[in-house]
Amino acid sequence: MAEEAVLGYLLDNEEITDSGQFSDEHNLNHDEVVNVIKRLHAFGYVDCQNIKRVSSVLTDEGKKYAAEGSPEVHYFLAVPAEGSISKEELQKKLSPSDWKSKTSVFRIGSIYAIKNKWVEGGKQVSRKVQHVEDKVKNLLLQIQEGMELDEESLNYLKNTRRLIEEKVWKGYSIKKGPNYAPKRMSFATDLSRENLQKSITSMLNDSLLMLDIFTPFSRYSNVRKQFKDIFRQMGFEEMPTNNFVESSFWNFDALFQPQQHPARDSHDTFFLKAPSTTRELPEDYVERVKQVHESGGYGSRGYNYDWKREEANKNLLRTHTTAASSRMLYALAKKPFTPKKYFSIDRVFRNEAVDRTHLAEFHQIEGLVCDRGLTLGDLIGVLQDFFSRLGMSKLRFKPAYNPYTEPSMEIFSYHEGLGKWVEIGNSGMFRPEMLLPMGLPEDVRVIAWGLSLERPTMILYEIDNIRDLFGHKVDLGLIKRNPICRIGIE
Image 1 (cartoon, helix red, strand yellow):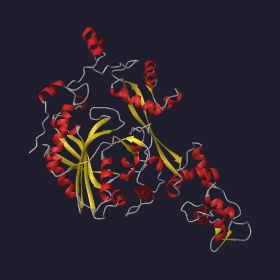
Image 2: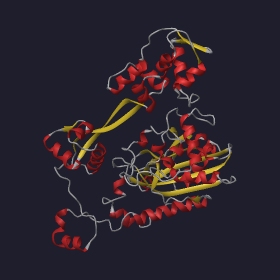
Image 3: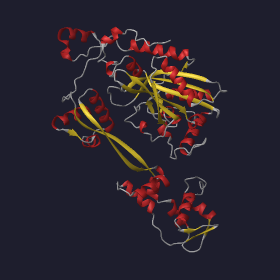
Image 4: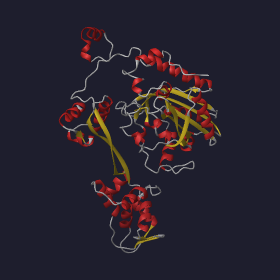
């Protein structure tokens, strides 16, 4: 329905200016529309441009204050208009059971009522003014109603009080692409007796794709085998990677990736509808991860936000095999420490548009070394050794940011076909905020790197479009010329 709506609208109109507005007007789910746009873009039916909007939304605490009033006003109103009241009595009135909590009405209310000079503190508390305005509640209500606030007020609510947070909305503007048609052609992709009979008599009216009988799997299996040989030559052991479906906890949270990170958006990640959540997680470890996210630890300030278990429980198609690495390191931490070298090669999934260098599904290669006293120099040395065994000696490293590694480096190799440097992977040293909650010793360091299986193959064979390497557009001549797809191993 969404695909028909998009193509049908473009038949009589030049552009869909906003996919969100289009979805609302046509009673469509925006996530479904986004997936349709990506699919149509991959086939050339539409061209699209990213739209990004940032808005402010209330946190759970902010919603409570908007409905019930701020703690400082509650605190002020609990103080008698004449005379005074003891702190102990205020505690009983405002927060009888949780007054020690960081979010208790008594604790927060006392801080801001005194700061606003509404009351006079001490063992006895009395009013300094008779009437106050609940500015915090009023500002929060304005945000709920969609009104814009000045920068000072936004900064106060967001950074000082942490009552609002930024919400990033992503969408697209869409125009007709070079292959536009009012209806997308459906292709028969299954090799069946019926399709073969039809193809002999009528070529299926050009609707049967040339089936890739040779398939890329013969090449990928051989490339994968040779990568495995390199890792084993270097003393690595393979990690189990049979979990295509992962929980957000192992895929993101255990890696110290905040829950507001853009990569966790449904437009970048494939979330499952059924089963939508994981059944079990290691509770003691979950609590430590929650703590380091919310308030830090191990020398870190953390992210200072309300970590939500329901977000961590969500199931998804893993976006990287580092989820397997987090499981392996956690298992390693439960035993007396032994240095380890691990690797994995398997499929991962990203909800992104297909283009000349990106696929929604690809193979990730990951290696890590876990030992005491490792440094960035060790990482660079291992990378140079690893890639030299692939015949890729032209390497460059660029400082980068990753939530779970510090320092971090992007890895570039020179692509002769494209005549430029191409990013082939990412690397870094896992952060203490990731390793120490697992229970690993403080002097243990982990260096790691990851890359796709497809990118190095493109560089080695001077292929400039990933769709020429994988899928129905594959160059069969390339397969015939390179039946084993050898990579030089010394």
